[in-house]
Image 1 (cartoon, rainbow, N blue to C red):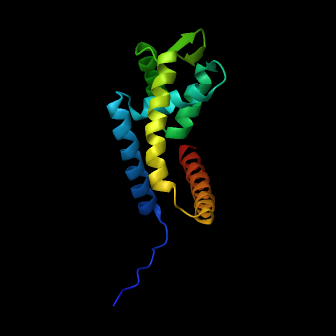
Image 2 (cartoon, rainbow, N blue to C red):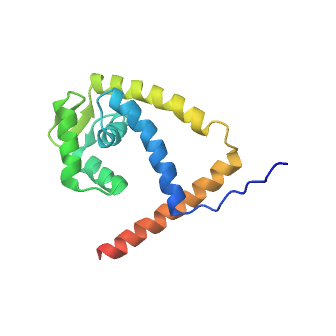
Length: 149
């Protein structure tokens, strides 16, 4: 006799558990390459940009994404510069060849893990999850804005 299992509805705890599990996979790769989570978050848009990025805008975007302080992000940019992964010219920052090579290695490793995690999920489930997660993020950001007032 087989017992039927039911999937519980999504909630904040379930979202958090999925986030931390996925982040742990990412951080295991980052650790092997000597990079921290916030460093990777800052490095990514520089790797994807066609040219230099305004440092202030990069910091503002990272603050908005990670919900961390400006000083923390500026410190992370300075760490990446000191490590030779990013270079600066006046108010702009850009990824170096070493930074791009590291980003590409990390992306290759994390892409393989992502394929194993996400690869066989039905498209309609991914679309539904995307709609729900977008709405949850919008509402959480609105809640944060209201609390900050």
